[in-house]
Image 1 (cartoon, rainbow, N blue to C red):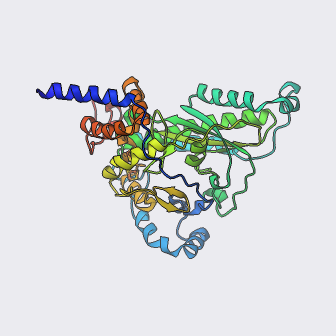
Image 2: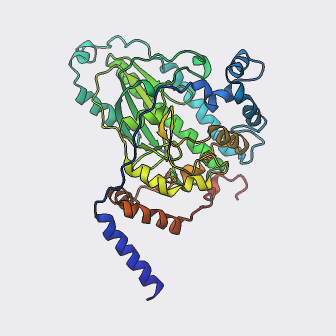
Length: 402
Ligand code: SF4
Ligand code: SF4
């Protein structure tokens, strides 16, 4: 039998198998407790500077973190001039996106609902809104504005940080009584993300923080104009842990690399959240046994991670639930060396492939049949490589192209 014929037979067998519904082993589900202090996140630790009172206070509270943090502080830093993947154009653009998203910060505050600007969309509207119509409107409008997906979760204690850790929220207890959270995802460009850990990846990442910040701010102002309270949770201004809200809003499941895995784009998304007291209709949470099962066998992100920050084993019990926990210290230290937010794990994930007919059929098969899931891991290695190289930088981003 010739090799092409054998491959053809294998593909036909895989297609037949994919059509048979076999769900496979059920993996344990455990919800987290509220435990994450934002001051312990790497972005917050990166923000405190030697000589400041916050710096002294933090390391008195967490002396064990000091030695590691001195290591990342000795590196060039995110978007640093001496960083390994420094690129003048891409870093300038990424910095511009982070600066531009600051324009939305003044709108974030929970504040009080706006005074009705006219009778038709003020108190009268407030009294007559039904959960269903307002929920539909907000989700559809988010998609029209450029979101990839949008969903609504009932807010729970574990969605929130215990204490804030960035800028003026530093050390303040997080206190938010909004009942609902609208989570939105925006797509990150496949070509640019596939170059990670090179510079185009951080350029795209920053751009999508900006885009998601714009959509979330528009939703917040719309809700306030309708007479409700609302707060944005966007770049550097989060009271909430976005992947958990997005998972509970039905947008995906949390995978091995600790990111939200959406059904069509995998982890190749950025998330923003709006919390509100508006009466909304919740979506079904995105618990997905098939994603957990696929991550159990795949491990491609762990294989390619340049800082070995992603575990190879099964999920374990943490205060954050029964989950995979990446090593945030070693990951961030690598970012400070690279100058970018790396994204190598996201780039190689089989769920991150472009959303097109073939990939969507394979994703459907992965959900439908647990044997096909195992074959799909092998096929992904065969077609894309078990340790794929980073994608080539587009010419227009290279400084020396003619
Ligand atoms: S690369 Fe594989 S193991 Fe890692 S998150 Fe994606 S599917 Fe899961
Ligand atoms: S972003 Fe890079 S360093 Fe961090 S976990 Fe992913 S692959 Fe590893």
